[in-house]
Length: 354
Image (tube, rainbow, N blue to C red; front, top):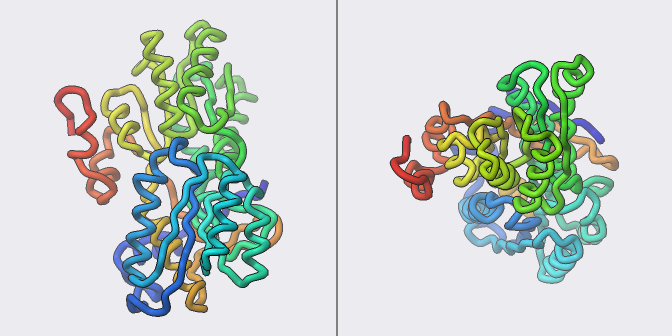
């Protein structure tokens, strides 16, 4: 697979522009020509971020940039044929821009081919579409996500430890990159005998229930002798933690995550989850909305790098992921405006430490 470009200073400048409303794209006046944009979610169960953050953030950003724009939102429930059908319907309904988070790397190519013929703009959102003519890609650096997760585990377990790796289903480019990034860190240490991977799974459907079963299998195989789990996201981490609780190991084993969900933040406060990869989804949604507006109005699409998707070099914006722990939760989770103390503490059992 093609490696994602490193996030540089230009990306950070763009991020500041997206947040503060500065920069060329932000000076565009609200209103303008009315158009329809389709915002496609892969699922709502694989991560709460799609329903809780990305969808409302994108709709808000679109309304700010062009109050007259119509946003069609769908979720495909992790079924590729359903996402394809929804895309065909969006084109029939007159969508001028398609914002697609593809379930699989090439699953939406028939719709994208049709969109290209009709001069409809296509944005790959969070996951790249490969082998098709996409005009823009926005995401967080997925390779870096995996690297950060693996490095955190390595830094917090004794040398020579046995760990487990619970990744998600290897169906999208970001899904693959999380795992590749993790093993970029782990492989040299495995070769040097400094770490052992005693169990590995690619969890179908990114299911927390399946992750719990996998972790139970890992604990049985390893006789509970495991120091940490590299876990792809907070939903899977919830399943891992459930299995650890059954064996009295929750809080004693390092567990990573991603997306900084409220459930994940609660687990971090309780000491069951060690960290989560923090992403300000608002940045991603705003960048996509700005690109959609630019495409619909015939203006240049702002970007900071290009990513080859196997067919074209796609103008792209990749934001830098950050490690969120109990120590910096207030700074990243609350002071950034991502969420509130009330939201985090609502589900916290007992007196919330924030």
